[in-house]
Structure formats: C-alpha cells, structure tokens
Image: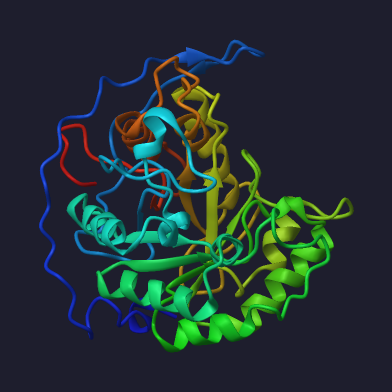
Length: 346
C-alpha cells in the first residue's frame, strides 16, 4: 500500500507558503577516527546516497526536536540553562507560550523542516489539558508540518501501563488530521519486551493505516526482543504493524562511529539484509531515520564525541553526515537537525 493516499494534510488544507531563510554553511566536516576497541577505521561520509524527496514527504523525516535556536527563548520548567536555553525542545512547545510557539513553527518552515515532535505525557505533566494539547497539534498541522506524537514516557508512564489510557486522545488527533506519525513510547526498552509487544500490538490495532508508527529505543538499540527471540524475530513479528525506526545515537560517539553503527542497522533491517527480512508489510522497507544524534550534549552545553561544542550548527553537521551513511538501504531523514554543506535545506 502506498501511503501517499493517506496524507491529505499538506495538500487538501491550505498551509502557509514556505519561505526558506538562507543559513550559513555547515562547519567543517568531522575527521575520520578509529574504533578504540578494534582499531578499525571509522570514516566520515559526506556524500548523499540518494536525493531526498523535493517536496514534503511523511516518509522522509526533516526535523529538529532539540536544536532550533530562538533568541530570547524563555526558560521553561524542565528546560536547559545557559546557552542551551535558547534551543527549542519541541515536546515542550506548550511551555513557551503562543507567541514563541508561532515563531518556533515558522522557524521549522524557514529551515525547510517538515516534521515536529510532541509528547502528550510531557504536556500533561506541565498541566496542559487534552483539549489544549489537541489544539496545539492542530496549530502545528495548520502551520504545514507533519505532527509526530511520542505517546508514553518512562518518567510518567508506569512499567505496566494501561494501554487504553490514550485511546480517546489518539482518536481525536487522527480525526483532526493532527497526527501523521505516532511512536508508542520514548526509549521503549525502559519497559519489558513483553509490555513493548503489547504496546505495539495495541497501538497498531488502534491506528491502523491512519498514521505511520515509528519505534524509538535507547542509543544503539534497533530492536527489543525477549531473551528467547532474536532481533530478526522482533521485526518479523512487527510485520504489517509498524513503519520503521527512530534511531538514537550515543552522543559520545564520533561521527565515524555513528556512521558505522547506522550502516550496521541499515544492513540488518534492509530487505534481504542480515536479518533476512522483507519489507515492513506496509508498502515500503523498514524506514530508518537518524532521529537523535547529540541532543543531550546540546541540552547540557557539552562537547560531542569529536570534541566540538554541541550547538545547533553541530547538530546540523551530524545530521547531514549521518544521512550520508552507506548501507543496503538509505537513511530516511533526520530528527536532530540538518542542512546541506552550503547551508541550503536538506
């Protein structure tokens, strides 16, 4: 099934025209390193393996949940301090107020980004009502963005959650065309593999083909099977239920290590790859998005694995370099920011 028929959001409803604002070139590329354990070379890749879609495409992720810089952005509860205070956490969107929300959404479009990530549990913990959360998601859709919701959180969801607790919210978001992508939970291996299986099965049954379903794990994980199963088994049992993976790098990895880990994942999950999988059962391969690279370093005003101070520009550099990683599939976008070396949108 082609998902092109399921995404009327950016076509059937009027959206603001995209006005791309030029940005400066990326910083210099990171240098090659070696694996500290094996001495194997870890090259940095700087050439795209395929041209990204020229128009907004729900299956090709363009977003930055941690790095967009807005001058004078106020401090919000749970947010960073110091230089990182000016970097937007999109899942805190309701904490910034409507004026800054408008500016944040406009900056997404100006950067050429198409996806924005929200988190109902973070919003509810802040005191936002379900109705206000839905209205915020609608405003994101009206701004011309695909809206992504991370439904559960290790901070606010129990280890044995009521899987139906968010059904009414999800139904309302889908009815308002304010949910194009859903993720069962942040860092899903916080929960037992058995709970994760029930979580996926429940959400897939609820959502069906009305939105994409992307999984998210701790750094370097691409699956979360029980001990008696393999990672290939995990994905085989997800056949027809989920669309792909929002991969999280360890921010202490060098750019070369990130590329090596991404390539390994691409080769495992590709049709005919190391896991012996076909496609996702949803009309395309298991899409592999490099969703998080150096977010925690950006949040903490720290240096990354290559020794650079983690700001928005560095997040964009890592996003570009990681998107260039080779493999049996190609990377399907970025979630921690990116642009081309000359500064134009990716």
